[in-house]
Amino acid sequence: MTRYVERFIEKILLISAITAILGVLLIFIFIFMEGLPVLQKHGIMHFIGGKSWHPADSEFGLLPMIIGSIYVTIGSLVLGIPFGIGCAIFLAEIAPKKITKFIRPAIELLAGIPSVVYGFYGLVVLVPLIRELFGGRGFSVLAGSIVLAIMILPTIVSISEDSIRAVPREYKEGSFALGANHWQTIKKVILPSARPGIITAVVLGIGRAIGETMALILVIGNVAMVPNSVLEPVRTLTANIAIEMGYAAGDHAQALFVTGIVLFVFIITLNYLATLVPKRVGE
Image 1 (tube, rainbow, N blue to C red):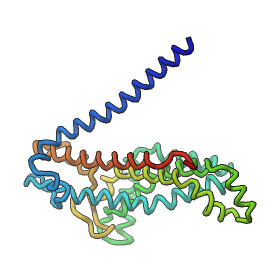
Image 2 (cartoon, one colour; image 1 turned 180 degrees about the horizontal axis):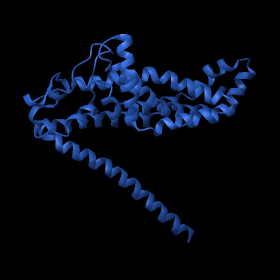
Image 3 (cartoon, rainbow, N blue to C red; image 1 turned 30 degrees about the vertical axis):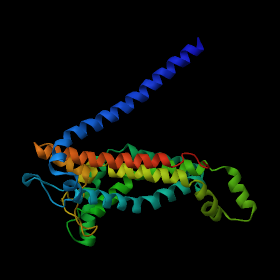
Image 4 (spheres, rainbow, N blue to C red; image 1 turned 45 degrees about the horizontal axis):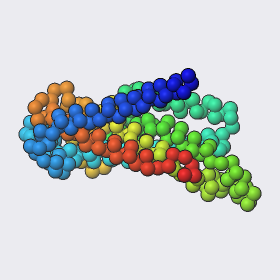
């Protein structure tokens, strides 16, 4: 009887996995088929290499949005990775248990806050602050990078902390036995051993950042131009779809689906890179 139950559960789990894969596949097919007509009409280089986005004139250059997404994502990583990994080291190796029990739930709470709340905070606090300190409109790559850096912190901190804690205790004890102090052990032994998990956390953080929409719409200015500095407004791929899909029609709507195809390729590539990173320390 137990054997039949196990087989039944295995079949249910297999069906669940296949359903999830089919769901993603159907979404990709739908987006691709909707964007294919205008893609065939103008050619892929018109979208990837074009710098002008004027749907009324049949100009669908996505290069400003691609660069904008990359700039904002890189900015969020530059700001978020040091704080995220530093916080993970503190929680795993330095902080007393009483402090850890307080800080960890607070960080996990960040993951549950709706993205629009982050965007509203950036609109009310960060944008005026950047405008006052650096000039300009305040809506900028910098504002988007700061908001995204806060949003990716839970992912980076949680996975990095788990990776650091997964390092065998014998490694640390062996380092101490050789005369290394705590910081030398963290730097030379623990972090190198936890590197695969930390890289995975960063890759997942990139995926979280590049797919964000609502928070960025409120703080980046949404100008479809290649920015010359971090203080200039920008538009991302996700923002481009969210802003214009409500009123787009014809080639314009199909061009937005091409935007979705480009974004989809970005996400798939990042997820593939994440699978290449060993999931367990020591593999």
